[in-house]
Image 1: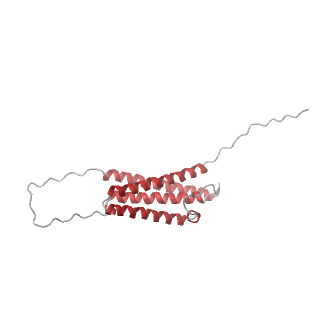
Image 2 (image 1 turned 90 degrees about the vertical axis):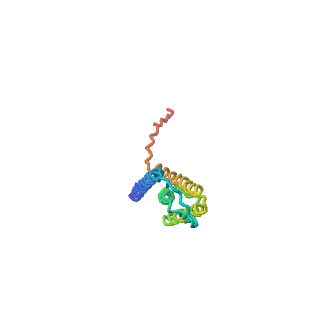
Image 3 (image 1 turned 45 degrees about the vertical axis):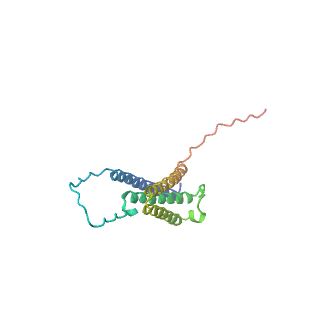
Length: 182
């Protein structure tokens, strides 16, 4: 095993650990944000106002805590996929190839990172558009589906890398018996 492939495996493990930590923090934050807040007491007397009611402020897409966490998770999964694809593409065995992206883009680490950042920004922009047009559940569903589908590709790349990294056991062949007529 060469020294470079060993360092690639170690750096891949660091990225894997970092993405697991980010996802754990994300889910802990989701649990904390889902807790109910105490109700405030209702006023005892109703006062009729002569002024026009103040219109409710629209909450922006990134003002919502869950949306920020989904955006960070999407970015993390996208970058994880870019890194694992790049590591698999630069493996000396050349047994992995990218089927959905052009080879010039997939063979460059910076090209994959740039592509992943652009796609993540596009998904976030589309979700923000849906959020601002009162399709909040659809906006979150789009983000969650993107995380799930790209996360599946990331896990696939890690499984391919792990299978290649495990040394294959030596195969013992049965003894060959040759009969010579005498």
